[in-house]
Amino acid sequence: MRIEIELTGKCNLACVMCPQVFGYDGRHLTIDEMKSFSSLFIEAKEVTLHGAGEIFLSPILKETLDIIPEDTPIYFLTNGQLLNQKNSNIILGRSNIKRIMVSLDAYSDEKYKFIRGGNVNKVKENLKHFILLRKKRKLSFPKIVINATVFKYNIDQLLALAKFAKELDSELHVWPLLKDAAHYTESWKVKRGEYTFDYTKETFDSIEDKQLLKREYLLLEKYCKDNEVDLIFDAFMNLPDKAEDISTCGVPNSNRLFFSDGQAKHCCLQTKPLFDWRIYPANNFDNHPRHLAVLELMKKNQIPIECSSSGCKYVLDGISSEFIDDRKKISLDDRGFRGGALSMRRRKNELKN
Ligand SMILES: C[S@@+](CC[C@H](N)C(=O)[O-])C[C@H]1O[C@@H](n2cnc3c(N)ncnc32)[C@H](O)[C@@H]1O
Ligand code: SF4
Ligand code: SF4
Image 1 (cartoon, rainbow, N blue to C red):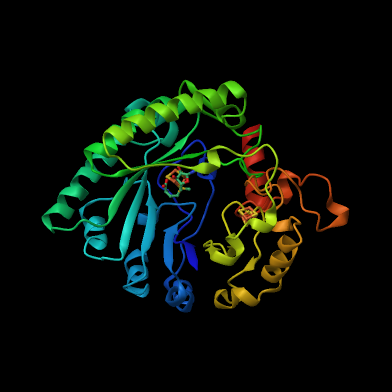
Image 2 (cartoon, rainbow, N blue to C red):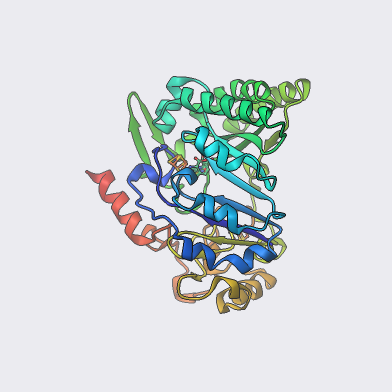
């Protein structure tokens, strides 16, 4: 079983493609709440720590690492802004932290600033320093993975990011903008300086867009092969034209995802949570009626309400067949996006102003 836990929904950046840009006000998970997941950690094959926020802002990072069994592999995602000496020392020496995925999205100062609203040089310095500290301790783990969420505006940054990955002896992971119901909306427009990020125009949808992506991918692949940089170019990039058989989705059997605001899901693409783990115990996930209902529906090749319009390859923009009265497309306010209708409404209001 793979467990994913959001340590915090708070962030120190505001990236144009992330709900944080609209003032998403997430919360920190408390240590008592974290302890309630202890029995799941014992069963887990791996634990991923991340969320809709920045892990190094969590006041319980160190205690959390202490709770997770020493032989359970841990992966985590960060924007790297706070990967300073103190935080590096919390991580180094824990042999079960296998990979730290650091999201950069751009190599140039200018593009990073427009996308992430911060200083890229700070992250570059932090990473170099982290690697120096790791070397001093004669450790090869954790590995650094440079992450790039790719869209049209930053596609020209991939090669430079691959070269940076080479310089750090790290890996490169490229993934696309989510096209789930919550993100892929025409009202998502963010103006930053002279750049306006327009969500649905930044994805690779037309044949020409896909050709551009393919060309860039081939260049990147060649560079990475020639220079021995491990490259993961997410398969989710190439969504099929027709949804794949949902009964073949193994995620509900293998993944458990818990957000700090109580949402329990199978995967981050689900548009509605299964239950609130602050009310129903997380360690009894396997017996929750909605979990069992999802398994049953999927077996019959039907889309559960939790996966409706999820944008994954098994659903695409398909809607749930579960509630006969609700066959029309789910409205923005009903999509259960993180904080649910409230954050969506706030976002729409802000866009109007
Ligand atoms: C939400 S962030 C949380 C962790 C950390 N703050 C960071 O930036 O890595 C996790 C990852 O999601 C990516 N991300 C944010 N918005 C996205 C979107 N709309 N589509 C796809 N990935 C997105 C980020 O670039 C980052 O790599
Ligand atoms: S750093 Fe991560 S969580 Fe924060 S705004 Fe950017 S993508 Fe979102
Ligand atoms: S959203 Fe898609 S990938 Fe996630 S559990 Fe549902 S069908 Fe599977």
